[in-house]
Amino acid sequence: MAGLPPYASTGQRVWYYSFRVICGLIFFFLIAPILVIIPLSFNAQNFFTFTPEMLAFDPAGYSTKHYRDFFTDSDWQLALRNSLKIAPVATLLSVSLGTLAAIGLSQSHVPFRRAIMAVLISPMIVPLIISATGMYFFYSNPYIPIPFFGKVELPFTLTGTYWGVVLAHAALGIPFVIITVTATLVGFDQSLTRAAANMGAGPVTTFFRVQMPLILPGVVSGGLFAFITSFDEVVVVLFVGSAGQKTLPWQMFTGLREQISPTILAVATILITVSVALLFVLEILRRRSERLRGMSPG
Image 1 (tube, helix red, strand yellow):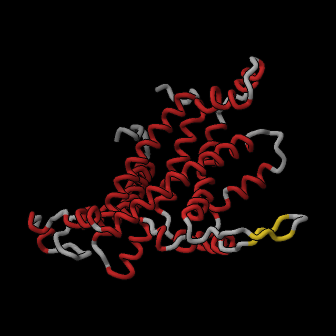
Image 2 (image 1 turned 180 degrees about the horizontal axis):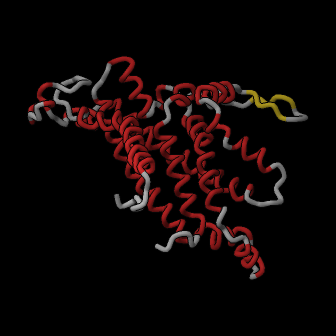
Image 3 (image 1 turned 60 degrees about the horizontal axis):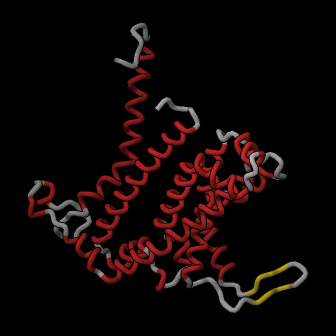
């Protein structure tokens, strides 16, 4: 009743409570499939369902053996190492290129800004299977067409290599960096860069000493989104990568398709925990960005 004024009509009261019930049901619909995974990951049996012992809260029905399998199995550890090698490099490329693109597109004198922005964020809009197919044919083609020179043959192809997967994941992460950094630049005072230039600072010094400290929350937020995108992606790596680049999501997909390994539940729980931690970091960065731009009192 605290959110309702005392003079609210019956219809307003009905809508007030109905709206909250609807939001609660939508939230439950979205979060329930994720929450079910967590207790199932502690199942003492090799089942994907709740056993009678688990439903009775019998300690004998719970175990951490699936987590032990994850940390001791060589296939899972190889997949984890691959993910930890690919995701940070892809994130670094996404942040570097996406930040520069966002700063360039924030300038009013750049022609065709909207068209360029649409092209750069197209990986978020185009279905992932189409992007993966295009990347496969592009990376597997050893011939690169160059105007006035015809086709130039490369001594290698990018399919089945770490750099091929890294570049593919970077292309998927760049749109997230561009969007978050562009949103941060909306409240950026361009007179600060002009003042730095008047004081004799070069473009590089102005960027690192003036712009970067103010847009850093947006850059880090975009980097976290790019990291999550690379760490959780499976479709592109199936097309571009090989068995030597098998990542954690690829191993989970294999476990579901071939051997129905319950270790998947333990891995999923770990990924959920990491994602929730990253979301808390994003929220902290969002509030810090608002304070820097004077949108929040503290």
